[in-house]
Amino acid sequence: MKVTKSTTSYFEFLNPLHPFVWFCTIGALLFVIIVLYVLERIGNINRTDYPSISFKECFWFVFGSLLHGSTDASPSTLSGRILTASWWFFALILILSYTANLTAFLSVKTINTPIKTVTDLASQTRIKYGTVKSSGTSGFLKNTDIEHFAKMWAQMSEIEPSSMVDTSEVGFKKVKEGNYAFIWDTTVNKYKTIEDCDLMEIGPPFDPQGLGISVPTGATYTEEFSMAILKLNDTGRISEMERKYVTILFSNHSGYYILTYLT
Image (cartoon, rainbow, N blue to C red; front, side):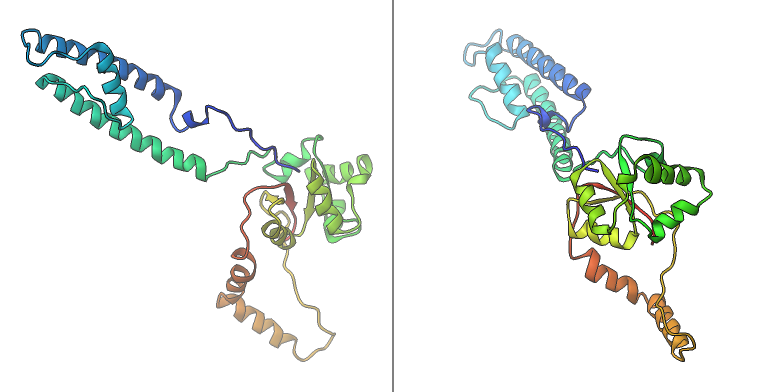
């Protein structure tokens, strides 16, 4: 099924911090402005050589400090400068936290999926789902005694027979058209998702099975094949080839929903 893309908001720059943090920051800003103005007025009440800064100058000084900006006016009293140093330290911590969270928000894209497992697929009717006719996958769903799989087979074969497809390519095409989940072999699904960034695999494999190589009856090299495959698996060569030829070649971050079947 097709993933619904989130819309971009003009106020998305506020997301890195919780609204409560923003309100506290605004409150702290106003508090520091008022306290700095009072300290400057009291500290310079008897001084004529260095007049105290106005309330507007206090506002722009504190606000500019929060954004690492500079202003013409600055505190002249010791208490005002101590308060300013404390505010600078607070602004430094706040900006570092905001920058770190903003980087994470821009780097990581969260995909919300209404389907997490096969059970979720079986318990809804909005999203159509199917597999290839007369395939091993359809045979498993048809002959299983597991309740939710039997329910899925009834939905696919009787209620929505059009959800069954003739080939896997037709199934992947229906997935890309939207509102459809295709149940198929995990290996094929995994390759399709990394080859085509419009596809996405959802949920862990169910009914895991092994795959083998067919040889003629009585072949003398059967045991040699078996030992060679076991050796490749034990030495990690199979996993190495999978990472080299499948995992590393492509990168997939968004797409559609595909449910898995085999491993």
